[in-house]
Image (tube, rainbow, N blue to C red; front, side, top):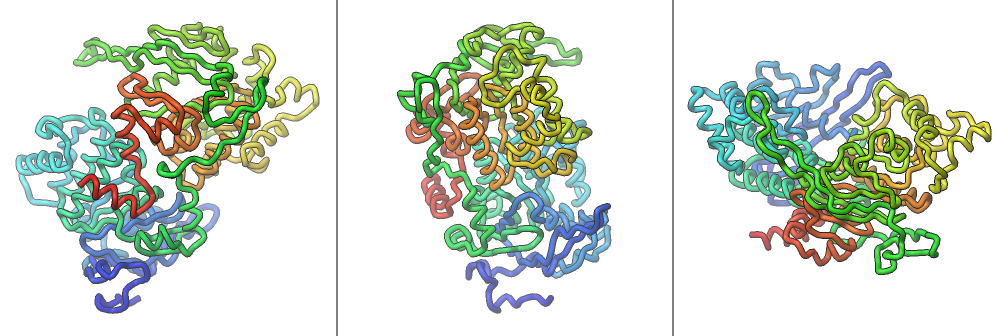
Length: 599
């Protein structure tokens, strides 16, 4: 395909200003096909776009849409994966599709830099951060070690890492998640690229850190006139920083346009579905279904009436400290308080949203509730029974009443077991966990056995209940999508007829449409089985849409607690306000207004 003249008709959806920009990167008719045991898989099918200096192009789509494969193919990273590549990728007129490996080595990092989603897997844990930046600089630029080190320190400072002269000698594990991502950006920019590809650069970060990284990328884009490709499934992030959007689905671009065109006048049904699945903090959550108790129907949305609900879980004055060790022999140098005098209550049929950033103490609190760690002091009562400090033998029968749904549905499922075995193991363990009659409404295993039901049928019923089918029984986790794996995790938790489910970031790793499905499923199961949830997340926008009440944790303490509407609309603590301000709004006009206020 021939290149479109700069003064010719502009591409649909590209603003007049961006159409005038000379193209640094041109992708034409790109097709990528992978050879697999099951046959050929078309990952990218006829993708074309241009990118100019100073422009931010967002490529949006769900997992498997082809957006990351497109980015990797630009750098020639798909060649070693049995890929057949057709089409054209030109950088400043240089063809990259058929370029030699030596030519691509000069392009990677030097001309085109890439920042990946998980900086911990991109940084070598056994080398200091500064050493890795220096190594990358010297591979592409003629500099002495001293000059490269000075540049590494300068770049760490440029990406706002404090005390960069000292932190340059830290190891990756000594950096927070946000600092590691900043270090990756510093490494990329030290090579002075003309094109920056950011592949889900904020997905694993807390909302305030995400806001800082987005602001940093926007500033660096302006100051260095970078051509930037932002790959993401988060439309709130797109509204904050992008100039144009490409929407990808099943390897194809199904829609392209400016921010306003895509957000306010989407033409493709898939684009409309993506936008419809976005959870928005600036819009009220949908009404929750009515739950019933022995006292009659009570609205699930919290009110003064909710005080009549009997408490299922009561935590009072909980404290948990951990020793701080260091030095060659890892001697104890003190202790840190992870949970500091925390008190909370969860009623039957209620969802308590537990919000806070990494290191706030959320996970430690949940582990104590689950009996996985013993608190130093305080009380945890479940259905009026004290469970804090119970020996494992006495805690075991209670584990069936308190279950957990994990953040990563892949690492929490045994990859060597089929779905039927994973869920079936929970069913088989229920008899040993049982400690009295269940009230969840799910037939007990012993009752099923008396009725002569086969285990396969029992598992099939559970799978169907969470939106899967009996056909998934014989599949392995790697054969399922992320959303399907999370449904298996929920089925496994339901198998033992719990009364309380602790959901630890259960949707943060999922695409927006899958996230919406899982949230709907959790609400439906709560209504059907009178479940209670502790819903843990760092995204207060998601928490608002599922919770009756919200508790905000910061530095081991609950700094604010109350009904969802009150906390989100009238926050009293500065930390809560900072969390709310940091949530990206998937609305370009609102994002522009917020940026104007900040500036």
